Image (cartoon, rainbow, N blue to C red; front, side, top):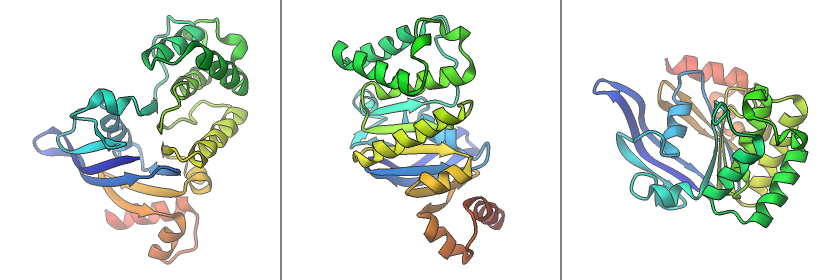
Amino acid sequence: MIEIKNVTKCYSKNVKVIENLDLKINDGEIFGFIGANGAGKTTTIKMITGILNITNGDIYIDGKSISKEPIEAKEKLGLVPDDPNIFLQLKGIEYLNFVADIYNVSTEKRNKDIEELAKRFEIYDSLNERLETYSHGMRQKIMIISTLIHSPQNWILDEPLTGLDPKASYELKKIMKEYSQNNKCVFFSTHILDVAEKICDRIGIIDKGKLLFVGKFDELKKELKENKSLEELFMEITKEKK
């Protein structure tokens, strides 16, 4: 479970990128965090994962404060970032073992999971090649696999479908559903609204650092009194609040 309590992020005294954000993402659900580019999605994720400091408020990962207990909190999460271009000099298998070492994953478990997931994403035969030779989509697959090796209770994905081929996108969405069905928390940031509409149990709409709506898709339709797609309702609510 992820709890964001009255969180504000300022890059300067007069510029609030995130303002008084209160949000709870439960175990056993896929939560879609949606907004336009620059709305505050990635900034929020960077605070959840401890990459950015919080100006005010706090964030708890299964009860552990990311500010006061960063190691304990980070042990409980896995992050698929929006940019997979890291450690490009390593081979795919070297990077996966590096992450497994960080989380003290046993040799037996890591070998089993790496083989299963790499074959599932059709990248097993490329594991001994350097990441710098991979396409963007292949690097994205490695990042996804690396976050699953230690089976985190809280799985955070920032625009994870970018660059993935149709089969890999299908597998990722399937794994997200499997994950939530195992009573784990999936926090899914995206601007692909038709995907969010189909797979998310609840959604949060953020615009200019402020949360405009949190709830189920059906609740959004009732609030706006419109039987439209999420994409159409998103355009209405963000326009309405400006």
